[in-house]
Length: 365
Image (tube, rainbow, N blue to C red; front, side, top):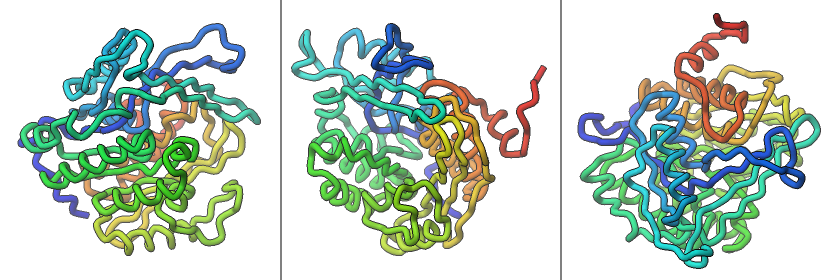
């Protein structure tokens, strides 16, 4: 496949992500409702991709986001710096002492175990990035003067507010103007869209965004809820995967949106919170490629697994333009990321490529 990527020599960034970064508070093996202490991390559906590309794949990445200018915002900036992601594009917003003007988002997340599924409890209304307008970011400067080869954003940020819907579209249009490749993870969250119009609004916004996307990412529910594509023969409770139905749906999506250069989706069968079957598929140039199967994958923390898939996929597409290799980078990276706590990857490129090559879990000395 030919992505027609901008030359690295004319771009400051290999990739930039647009979205919210929250403070994740993790009770470890316990429950949110009974916790007496939390471990702090940073995380966000779009940011996690930039961090994975930086930390695991050693690419130059940045985050376009906004923070309330206070101690929590500075903590978030410090976390992002530790992940190697450029913080110069962050918009710092004035706030008051109680977050009335704007605030920073919190995400309480427990990992789940066995028959007890993972649980997320977000506290993110009125956040700085949800109130940011296109005028808060100089997209012509970011994509034109500085240069970015790739922009990644997604449906979690788009669902934050009516305003964020507009900011996503402005960013994507500016990126396309300067030849930047755009990827978008549909990442449908019904609870987030409910406040601004529900599924009807999700489809209205995402169908418009899809017209500008080069690489579309999403699972079975995402494509149905956000773009209106039905998957024939799918299990109502999504317990069993219908691969033939997926393939047919992806081909339909590619016909509807001829601008799509690639369409990718993870394939997850949840047996328990700690054991999933995991794989992925990617459509490109009329062909569908399936990754290696990770049957009975043992999971420590599933949150961020899809984002790590996206970063591996993007790395593979950018460096090889080979969809089959790319989907295997994504699946392996996602699988490894789910073996460690936190939203973000702790894997190395060497480990990802070893898993792709069939390496086992024997001790390394």
